[in-house]
Image (cartoon, rainbow, N blue to C red):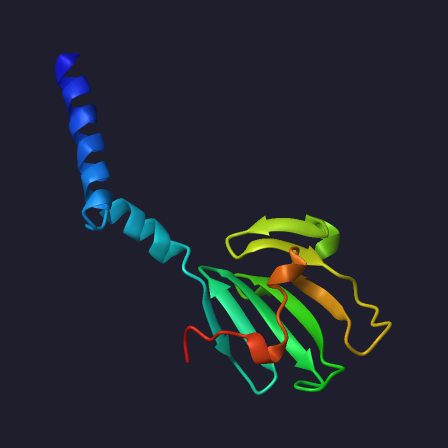
Length: 132
């Protein structure tokens, strides 16, 4: 019993000291690598946010203009996610996603899948690429 308590205390001390002294905890690093989101342009008008088997592809319509709109596709394992089956809002490793419908009432509307938090939706000039 005391041995088990000692092991837990030592493990906690090591984890704390690693973070205090700037050393990396291998378990935390593995978790970060698994959830790392890469952002890249896969064509002139399509940007991809990807982590693991999940991918959000945003097509920018009228890219660079004041009327720029977005149409998003959410993929899991390279297969489209159907909002009718999984719901219009779902939690993914990319973050919470929302389906904004398919009807475009104005040119600059957001349609299809995109981030539920509208602050995460960026116009094409504000996309920060992490992988080329």
